[in-house]
Image (cartoon, rainbow, N blue to C red; front, side, top):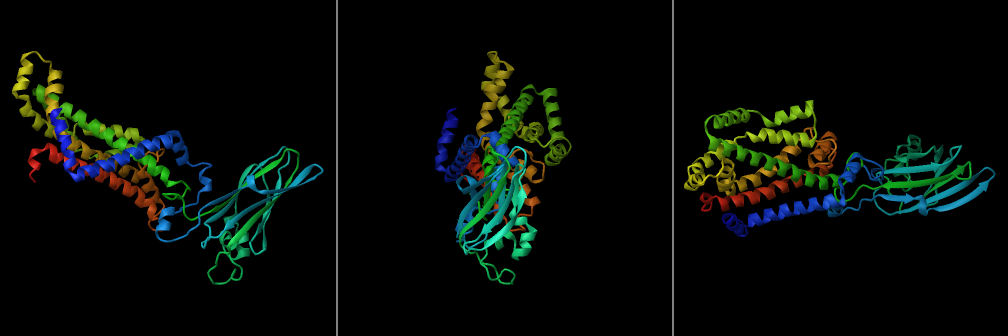
Length: 446
């Protein structure tokens, strides 16, 4: 214990170790914050998609990246009927209600999409809604009408008839300055106040209508969105505790079990040591990644199944031979002979006298082993064998690869998880190399 404390006290002499510890601490703090800020069940619901994502733009870049390049791309606006101007005109057997959804648009770039979400409550007959678009210069553009039978989405941007009338896609034509609607000139945004007028006809006394107009922007949040409107920040945040937990559990499981098995073989010798060495030699030639690919393809891609396979294949790894070489001289040490003379049990000698002697030397190896398993989990997800439920860094990169993100210019989709993986590897590597110099005397003069 004293040797450990003296070794750890020397960490502050190595700036690389301090920097590595700072990076690891930042990842741990982010993991703790994520677990409390976005509970596990909520994270799964968000990643599966739902009502929240429908208000997000598709493939929107991060807002900070746009500001960093001096841009002023629009953000998403949600105009709800809760604060809309309402006019009621009752008639016998029903009522006509006019909802006016107003918003200001002053950005230089057009929005990426326009959607209208309608939710109607009625008893017998479905309400009928007619839509009218008003521009700042007084023009009125009819958007047609429809019956609303519950909760529906009106995809204004995908109205092909409206696109033919405007000469541009609707989310451009409805906000474009008049004068070059059908020309070759590039359209310009007409800044000002826009209105979407909904004339609804209800049949019944208790009927009502809620509406949300979503003017989708081209940037969103800190990490942007993907092709399914999901906020990538959820995956980047939750990928941190998942990656650290996978790497830590795999490193602990393989290192501890391998060390104990090696010590058992050294102490008992004979056929016990022979069996352990033969199993190790067979296991060394088994390729880990192809086996994991086979398990993920034929059995399950659950992260816990993959973790169990990694630990099982890592028990009889090449580390057993390294640990065996370190433990052989310790077995013949005088204090071990003394412990055996006063009647110490085999388990006590192995766990209390042999293993602790080499633990300080193994700490650097253990630290540098954690990012190895983090990269392994990300590699499996990148190959399409990641857990389909959990939002992880590798799953984000797999989706980016499937959607040709780099080809379409969505660099943020790949760079963000890749940067987190590099930071994780860098932090543990810097700390591990510094600890190796501290606990291995032969490296101190190098």
